[in-house]
View 1 (tube, each protein chain N blue to C red):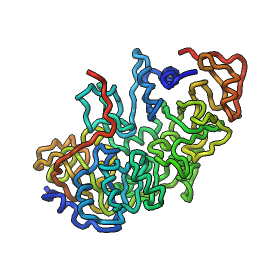
View 2 (cartoon, one colour):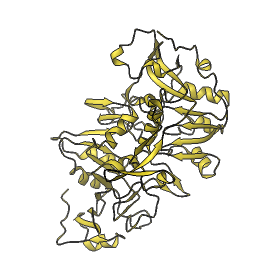
View 3 (cartoon, each protein chain N blue to C red):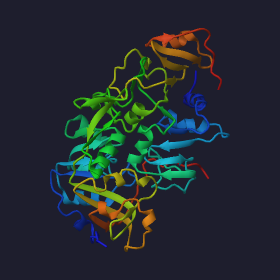
View 4 (cartoon, chains in turn blue, red):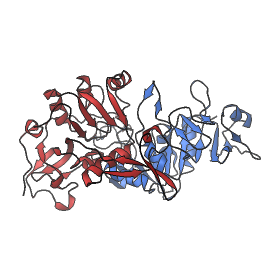
Length: 217
Length: 232
């Protein structure tokens, strides 16, 4: 089984040379720590920066330079700042190659829910609805089950949707899965996790074909 | 040169009244019009509708207006950092219209640019699209979203000149440029107000035509919400 860093490490393998990448808050943010240093990647943050670098050194933080998680950041050579409308032109216009975000639920048809629990928690969708409605390449990073132990990979989302039929790939603490017609196609198992474990933790239709390899991380 | 300069925040906010709709720039607490917010608190006007990506934190930014129950309705994309906001929303005291961030920006830009509405894929098939017209273009579904209508825009820039030209810094730019000229009156507060001719015309982000009033802001706190650093 993977921890959050393990999930981020596996997703980092999906980041290719020349990609512009948008990372959501939470586990997705960790992905930047594991991208190979021999490839060139630029991270976009939807509040208006392309070419995000690491967190600033203590004492060098600038209140005017933050990421979408409101954390202080730095920029790398080649970086640029822009307004919110132009930022979402990049996203809606499909200029961003890969979007990685978290979710509360994913359905077997690619629907995703991650912004609201009616009557309980309403933080808002932020840029998530624009991101999922536009990107062709969306990877969800999340734990396979919620804190109550219930599956987050469902036949149908129970929470209000963020987007319909948009998720292409999911990386959890247990597995790598792809959304295909008919359900979740199991591609890889996390180290030490059996197909049976994954079946038990998946409420939606799990498609298993042939030998499912263990992840290499 | 047409001068847009006013002497202070009091003159800049002349004409604001109860029940008006305001646009306020900023992302989180970054690039918010701190002086205009403080003056709105001071004026004590009520029942305002605020178009702002976020709602501040409990004791800063729009949180200051929420504390005084001056806001009737918020139109935002993300409101997660404010307990008082959540309390007022869940109890029904505060009306909230959550809007996808890109749609929020574009509804400002449409108002600025003279477009009454536009189609976006964001929110299709979700509760955000309920009651709105949807239409297919090239095999994909889109939702019709309308431009905002607002009485005042309050924006914050880094530098500005007497003519109302603006330059923003870093990610404090965010929604500010999109809101300039998107309301009946745009009020810009700047960290540094300079005479016309001092800013390089090649480097202006927002031309003064979009700004009706500009003033030198004071005492910027620029609070950081998530100070995140690496040890030296």
